[in-house]
Image (cartoon, rainbow, N blue to C red; front, top):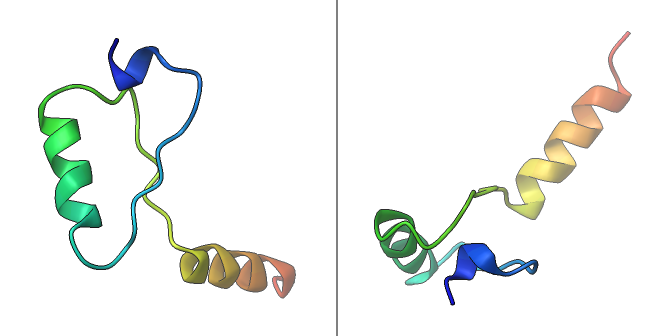
Length: 53
């Protein structure tokens, strides 16, 4: 079974070997898609959208 056949998600740490592991899985076509987002990016985006005029 490939990871892409699973309904669940896979979480990688933003620091250390997490990014390298994710890239290896992408290169091997075991992932159907990727959302590369950190909590800092999510909060910044939400904060900026809340203060738009």
